[in-house]
Amino acid sequence: MKKSALQVARATYQPKMPKALYGSVKIEEGAATQSVADQEKVKELFPNTYGMPTLKFVESGEKNDYPAINVGVILSGGQAPGGHNVIAGIFDGIKKQNAGSKLYGFLMGPGGLVDHNYKELTADIIDEYRNTGGFDIIGSGRTKLEAKEQFDKGLEILKKLDIKALVIIGGDDSNTNACVLAEYYKQINAGVQVIGCPKTIDGDLKNEMIETSFGFDTACKVYSEVIGNIQRDCNSARKYWHFIKLMGRSASHIGLECALQVQPNMCIISEEVEAKKLSLDDIVTDIANVVAKRAANGNNFGTVLIPEGLIEFIPAMKALISELNDFLAHHQEEFNAIPKDDQLEYIKKNLSAENAKVFASLPAGVARQLTLDRDPHGNVQVSLIETEKLLAEMVGNKLAEMKKDGKYSGKFASQVHFFGYEGRCAAPSNFDADYCYSLGYTAAALIGAGKTGYMSSVRNTTAPAAEWIAGGVPVTMMMNMERRHGEMKPVIRKALVELDGAPFKYFAANREAWAIGTEFVYPGPIQYFGPTEVCDQPTVTLKLEQGK
Image (cartoon, rainbow, N blue to C red; front, side, top):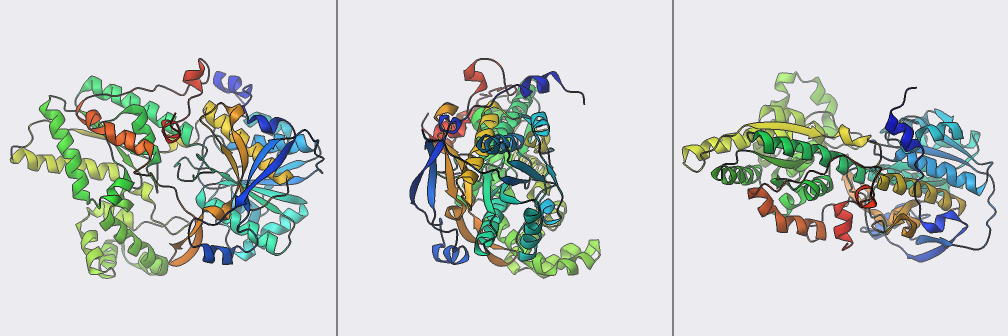
């Protein structure tokens, strides 16, 4: 297979790790933990894995003897840069413990476990994928592991292959499923450990023990490069407003980090929209006012960053979507059987008066997008809602009204973009290459220590990699109860942008200057080779959070 010059060069990169992981390790136990909310209910659902302590690996002079062990690995959910290095870290970690250990990859996500599709990952396969983007080593999928029949089918193949530990690499939903699986296997004494790894470019799987989810760093650097390129074009042609939607279903971490890197004229933060109870019209008016102010200075151009999940954070829209999700969870077949031309009317008739009114006010295209098939978790697929087009169109209409009232005298032309897949499988930045390898190696250490129901944790990530702290966090510690498919379920609580956190405060303090002035920054592409201050930068978000 032909390889690019970069692929050849990256294959030789040796990821950096926390100093403690290079030799023998011992565990330091922290205090017992509890879930972030709904403690009694979560404890009742996870009697065998609730309340475990946090763990930290420290250097040990003692030599540990590890038996050979067979380990399984699953890539679950959407792709994120660095997944291959997590697998390489697991492989190297278990081989270091005992050269006789084996690693099996289940193909195309959790479905591979249930359907018994797998392959052994040998050294030559692993070496082919080190420091590369994508999940193509074994593929990924979105099958939810939640039914006892699935757990039992999975156990059949685990027993057949003599697999004693399973690592599930995924986001909050996938790690919730990993925790449910860990609890079930412990309850029936299956003899299978289950360990999770925190993956999502959205950045919404984090807490004091998980500082960042892997892939976020690379994705934001890729998006920021492209936004920077657009801003350079925008500042050159001086005739377009660019409306740029960015991934981030449930949180605006990507939008905020990209804003911190490129200094756009506007960046909407969904969490702020919800806190201030803004309507769609409020948002449109805010953008139109900035367009008008810039036009008064002779600048008929600019950039607006929009988080993918914005629609769900507008309170009136959130209430509508919540009712729609519940309704369609129970009437999907009935809805599908109705002729397409009558579907919107059918929905309107079955909604409460207030939500029906909001639904009726939407452009037909957006209303239809809200009724499209749900994702496997029962949620509206917000990436299919073209929020960037909706806002560009509505801002244009608002400016036309302002022109009639003599409040605007510029020219408005818009371009729309959605940056999503461009960042999910990019070759990982040095940070993600190092962080992911360390997460995988830590997962191997947790397996060696006989742990289950833990997520691999690597902290202190704004320091050089040697000073990172490796350990484990009980997955139950991150859980609360939420409504899914019309029922209350235990899930890992998503980490949203904190409006009193340092990253948002820095953004809020500067956004007015960025809005009216043209203070664009052009980050350029991810750098692998060159001075450390260019190649090994963590995200601005992490630096601000840690006061660096």
